[in-house]
Image (cartoon, rainbow over all chains, first blue to last red; front, top):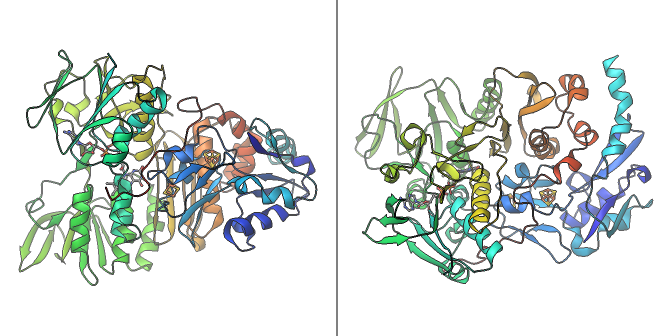
Length: 157
Length: 446
Ligand SMILES: Cc1cc2nc3c(=O)[nH]c(=O)nc-3n(C[C@H](O)[C@H](O)[C@H](O)COP(=O)(O)OP(=O)(O)OC[C@H]3O[C@@H](n4cnc5c(N)ncnc54)[C@H](O)[C@@H]3O)c2cc1C
Ligand code: SF4
Ligand code: SF4
C-alpha cells in the first residue's frame, strides 16, 4: 500500500503541510486542526511531521461502537461524519495519538490520505513527506532520539 | 457437519465475536445467537438521549445483516440454564439449543442500592434501550432531575440531560465525584467546572429513603435537607447477568459478581465454553491479574479474540487496559491503566486557570497509569490522550525521560517519539492480521 513516508531530516518546520491539511480536512486554514502535526526539537531548531500510520489492525476502527470508521479506496481508515456520534472512544484506543476530536463539529477526524492525493505531500517544499509504496514504519524514532539526547543530558546534569 | 457456535448475548462482545468468526471462516460454520435484546451499543445511548442521533443509530445489527452473516437468531429469549456435559443451553421458554462451543456474553445490568423506595416505580436506571426510552420520555425542559451516583455512567449522560433543558443535581455518597475514574485532585477540578456550568453537586450525601408525594419524589438524606425531584435516575453501579449459570459448574469469582474465570484464550473452566466482556474476569494488561473491566474496548477485544479462537485460530490475549474518556460541558476527562496505585511513583501537574490536570504513574521506568483532564477545545488535551495510551500500552522503558517528565508532565510527545513507540506498537496487535471495514448496518429501520 502507498503510505506517507516521513523524512524528518528534510523538514524545515515551515508548517505548510499543516495549513494544507487543515484546509482539505476542515475547509479552513487552521493548523490547530491539521491531522499531520509538526513537532519542534532542540529548542525549535529542528522539526518532524507526524501522522497516522494507517496501522493494519486499525485500533480506531475496531473500537468504534457504531462502525463509523471505514477503509477508503486509498486504503486509509476514514471517519464517516454522518455515522460518528463523537464518543471519542477511537481517540483513546489509538495508541499512536493520531485520531482527533473536532470540538466544533463534535466528530472524530484523522488522516484519510486525502483519498489518494495527500495535500501535505503536495504542499511540502522539501519532500519531507513522500507518498509511496512502503511498509509503514517508525519514521521518527531515530531522529527524535538523537535530537532529544542533548536535552536529556542537560537535565540530568 | 459444520461446527455449531452458540453466542449468548448480542451486545458488544457477542457481536464482535460473530463478526470475527465470519471474517475468519466466510460462513463455513453455523452460528446461533440467543439474546434478550436486539443487538445495539449501550454506550451510544447517551447520544440518543441528547437527541444528536435517532434511535435507529444505536443498533449494531439488523435481521437483514444477521441473515447476511448466516446467523440464526433467538432474540427476546433469555438463557436459563447451561448444561456443559450435554453441550446444551435451555432458554426461558424451555427451548434447548445444542452447541459445539459457546460464548457467554450476557453483560451487566443496572443495580439499585437497598434503600427503601429505590426500586419503586417512576425511578429510572440508564443501562438498556428500554430504560433510555423511559428517561427520554421523563426528562423534559425545566424538570428537576436528581441523579444518584456520580460515577462514569452518570457522567456519560450528563450533557444529554442538560441539553434537554432539565435542571440537574448529582448526589454522591462518597466524599467526591468519579471515585473510580479519577483521583481527588482531578475530581475537585471537575466538580468546580460543573458547578460553574450550573450542575448542583452534593457529595458525601447518603440517601436513606425515597418517597413519592403527589408526583414529586422526595429523597431523604442522612444529614441535611431532603431533595425534591421530578425525575430520579439511579446510577448506583452494575451487576453481572450470570445468575442463570449458578448450577452450570463453571468457575466464577464471588458467585458470579466477580465474573467468570478465564484463561488467556478466554476459555472458562470448561474448554468449549468461552466468556467475554463485562462477565469475564480476564487478564489485566499491566498487572497480569485477573479482573473484570466492564468497559467497551475490553468487550470488543474479548469478543474478537473469542471469535478467532472459535473459528479455529490460536490467539492468546495479552490483556485489557482499563481506560475511560468522558466529556462533560466541554471538559475532557480520561484515565488509563493503574491510575489509582498507592505503590507507584507519581508525577502530577495542575494548571488551575486552564482547568488542566495531568498525572503520570510509574513503576521503575514503566508508565503504568495516567490521567488527563482539560477543555476539549484545547488541542493539547486531545493531542495527548492517544499518546498516553500508547505509552501505557507499550510498556516502554522511560527511565531516561523520568526527570524530564517529573518537571513537565505535560510534555509527553518527545518522550513518546524518542523511545520509538510507533515502532514498538506496530507489531502489538490483538488478532495479528489486518482488519476489514466493519460490516455494520448503515440504515437500520428493519
Ligand atoms: C449509558 C452507558 C454508557 C456507557 N459508556 C461507555 C463508554 O463511554 N466507554 C466504555 O468503555 N464503556 C461504556 N459503557 C459500558 C459498555 O457499554 C459495556 O461495558 C459493554 O456494553 C459491555 O459489553 P458486553 O458485550 O459485555 O455486554 P452488553 O453490551 O451489555 O451485552 C449483553 C447482551 O446480553 C443480553 N443478555 C443479558 N442476559 C441474557 C440472558 N440471560 N440470555 C440472553 N441474553 C442475555 C443483553 O440483552 C445484551 O444484549 C457504557 C454503558 C452504558 C449503559
Ligand atoms: S488513527 Fe491510529 S489506530 Fe487508526 S489507523 Fe491511524 S494509527 Fe491506526
Ligand atoms: S468518536 Fe466517532 S469515529 Fe470515534 S469511536 Fe466514537 S463514533 Fe466512532
